[in-house]
Image (tube, rainbow, N blue to C red; front, side, top):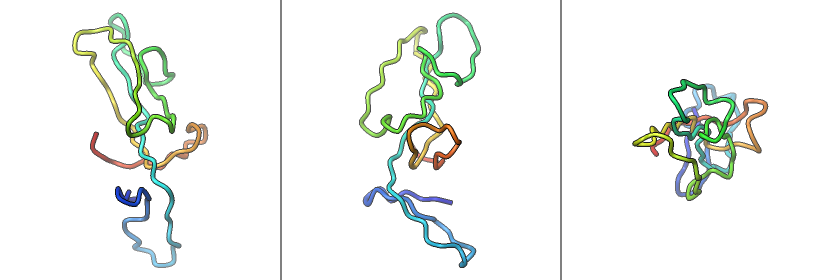
Length: 104
């Protein structure tokens, strides 16, 4: 289990039940992997692939303070967000984002 230290902006192992495991610590750059609105029409779609509606964006520059412009196609926009990461490289090609829970 990884935990982000908001003051130090770093992540570390929250619990080490196996003392043989080495300490793990790395820079924490929280970001949301999935940000999207309901697409035009009455379609049910997956978050992948991403499109004009947003979706599975997995981009490390979409972090605290970022602005993302997505067209609103329905009253109330029907926002969907999730897939929070503590840190991630340039995309998630190998599925290697560090997943965490958090408040948005």
